[in-house]
Amino acid sequence: MIGYMDNSNPTIHCVKQGLDLHKDSKSHEKFQWDIYVALASQYSNNLSEETKKGLYEKAAQGHYPGNQKRGYRTIGDIGHKIWFVDSDSQDAKFIPIAFELYDSGNFTLKTISQKMFEQGWKSSVGKPISTSEMHNILRDCFYCGQFIWHDKKYEGKHTSLISKEMFYRVQDRLSRKLTGKYRKHTFLFNDGLLICGECGRYVTAELQRGHSYYHCTKHANNCSQKKYMREEKIEEQILQILNSLVIDNPKLLEWVRKALKENHTSETDYHMTTLKELEEQLLQVSKRLNTLYDDRVDGIINKEFYEEKRQQYEEQQQAILDAKENHVKANIDYMQLGINLFELSQKGPGLYSERALPEEKRELLNFLFLNIKLKDEKLIPTFQNGFEVIARHAKDQSWLGVVDDFRTFD
Image (cartoon, rainbow, N blue to C red):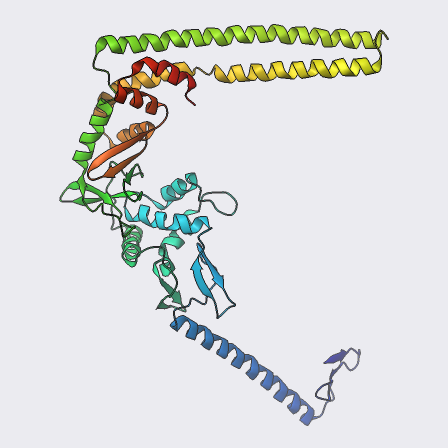
């Protein structure tokens, strides 16, 4: 089709059809044009219908015809896509965990997003997954093996990331949360501190007859940890663990305290003395650089000798500055930190018992423990923040080396 513009009579030439259209075209030429337009419209509509028909057929066969899904990849073109889990993506790893956390009833969308961000799940711009996106993920039945296509639900043939039971428990919780009819019970261990000692999944909590019970989410079908453990029994073991850090012998306790404090004083004196010596060395090198510059200006030494010595002195200067920086970092009172942690460990049981609110107890536990494994109704703690040093010596009753361990603790 070729168009020619004329101010008085614009013309369209349809080369293939041998048709010229302008304002003075005959009626049969206009009729012929209308037929071509109708045929083109019919072809377009038929193509659209056939495409939709093909997509509906694919959906009925269990293959989702839609666009990208987090945690999945596709093979094939539109209408012929085969979906499979993208094991290389972070989404496939963290989406099941997000469902588990919300299913536990102990997390909000915001706290799940933040916790997953700390573990490495980020958006494309490096930020936490937004709450709206997290809500969309938890609402998407694609992850339990189903999908919605044009307001109709289909059973998919793709591999699911979670079970249907978990998905619909989450939907029920989300619905009740939105309608305001659901009130979340605040559990003591509701921040992912407890994990299954067998499969590594988070331990969830349920409220039954006024008591809180904890158990593995059992997302892994081969996990044998099926017993429910009452919160009071968990707290009993927590107190036993904290009591295991306490030194019962008053003389031994005082000896450890004295050894830590004396060593802290000697560490501080050592760093201060070393820094003073480095300052003197730095001053000497600076004087040599100034003298060297004066000798060059006065013509006492040539340019080659000046450049050689200047480079040598500047390298010495940088080495001294690096040594100073290392000693400054080393003098951040690591031994004082060890003293504070030791004192806290000796007061741990009392501090825990004195805390009336679950939030206060959780704050203390999250500082002491990286996590606590629950296996066969027994707690297996993993300490952090220096308490692993104290726990190791408390277990072996080998307090003689605690000073050295705190000195080298990173």
